[in-house]
Length: 172
Image 1 (tube, one colour):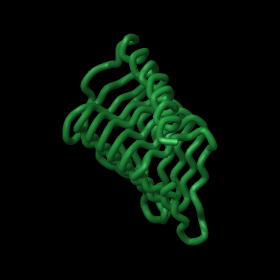
Image 2 (cartoon, rainbow, N blue to C red):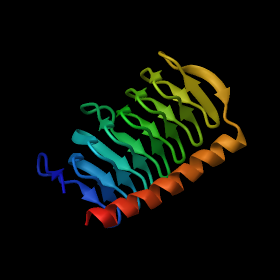
Image 3 (cartoon, one colour):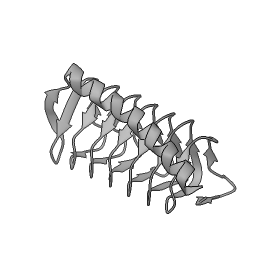
Image 4 (cartoon, rainbow, N blue to C red):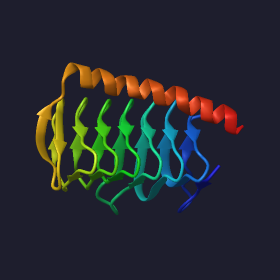
């Protein structure tokens, strides 16, 4: 498994989490139950801590990092983080969504059932309130989430948990 200690701190991975080949997890990183870290992701907790909540998935090629001494990265349970996203020194509350290729910068908060759209850039210190979608570069309010969109995101979490377990079993 691609786990690396840094400054005498080692990653802590739940026994049922899926860490794909090619992912790199460094230093002060905690990955909780049923979470999945997909192919070629980097989670680098070298100068602050990273927590990945239960059942959260961080999809292929994404980067999760921190800011030296000021901002750790705290990702709640049941979050979806799309392919090639950058999540840096921020907080993602339970059931939040970060779209493909989106960037979340230092001090940002994405609240429960809120979404940063694909390709968007959430600039430092911004908060996406619960139930809102923000889009653009820089990201701004775009729309309110519908109940169907919220349900679709929550179903996406379930699908990724199942898919991660299939990958885990087949990769041995």
